[in-house]
Amino acid sequence: MKSAPFTLESGTLCYHGIDVDSNTGFESEEIYYDIGLGLKTDVSGQVIEGSAFNISNPGSEVFGTGTDGNGISNNLYNLLGDLAQQFEDDDLSNLDLYLGKIETIGEDITIDYVNVGQKTNFLDFLESRLKTNEYNAKSKQSRLEGIDEAEAILDFKTQETAYNAALAMGSKILQATLLDYMK
Image 1 (tube, rainbow, N blue to C red):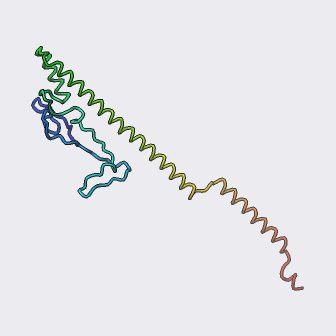
Image 2: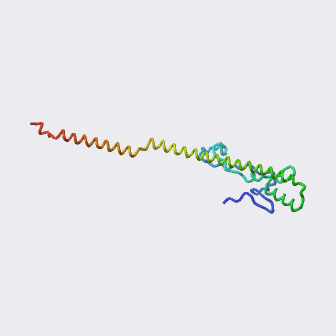
Image 3: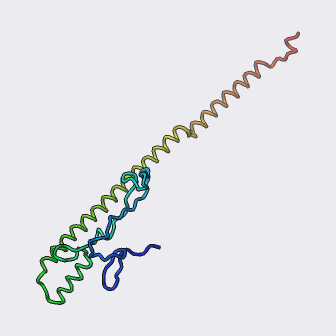
């Protein structure tokens, strides 16, 4: 079972064990999933980007990491904690910086939200396309292999009636035996 990526260690918020206010150690996480696009890898075993779907949306990118030039946290959780501490201490000197940072993080979260929506729309489109392809393949298979049962029964009955009529007509014509011809 996987553990949660964010943990609180000695009052410090960590992402996979790394302090979120540190500016290092946060690589972009990519988790690829084969959704029928033909998963391919390069010679080093890395997934080729267009052949699979990247399902990851790392929390480190959504909530932010590191600090800015003023020493203010880029992480929303820590930023709100620092802002609450400023209010408790009645220190409103850096309020504009904190509010500007919250606005910036809010815009970043909106962008991440749009990216999730884009991925959802792509998956919906792909699902629709795959369903259409499945329907078309089944229709083609049915036309090639299948039969219309009503038409097949009607054809069979017509041929059976013609066969029985030919047998009946033949038996009436050939009622004379071989001995009749020998006379």
